[in-house]
Length: 221
Image 1 (cartoon, helix red, strand yellow):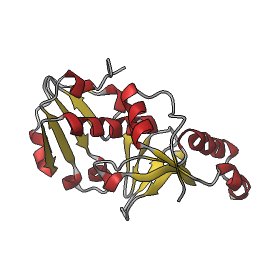
Image 2: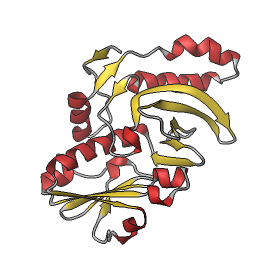
Image 3: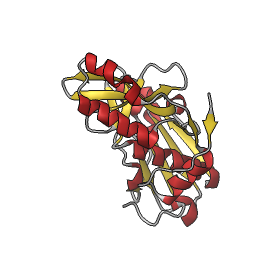
């Protein structure tokens, strides 16, 4: 596997995420989507779907980031593959797994990123939200004075009064919440996709100052 430094961090990310990708990410060589176009067309994959995959690859293809706190680290690196159709439309794989998890990381017909097993669990509205969440987890773990993890039914004990959603992660099944001096990450993807309530996880990053809470991000816009 050939690794390369990143010279072109994708736009549309917060300063925190751009710094994270540029500092901690690398690129690996990937096979161009266009090399498979003919094979997929012969199998009735619509040209517009292949175009979506090619655009995804142009923006994210080969990006390898540090492991995520959950989902056994998330995709090893981002790159599209395996287009498939169901009643909702066409899906494709967002990136290969790092380990033998019982689900795939997918992009759904509306562009949401999530995991697919027994059920579909859309984690973030876009792949950008996933990258923002990775960057925020890295940042929060560095600056928090205390980190606590709750699992299963214990997650329901968290009181989020006074907290607001962290907008940049574009959370769906997974969400982040910002309070006066803490960040809370709620991971419900495995609980939803695998119908496994104990798979719900909360991570509380406490003792954060303003920099720790935001990392230079002025708002949640």
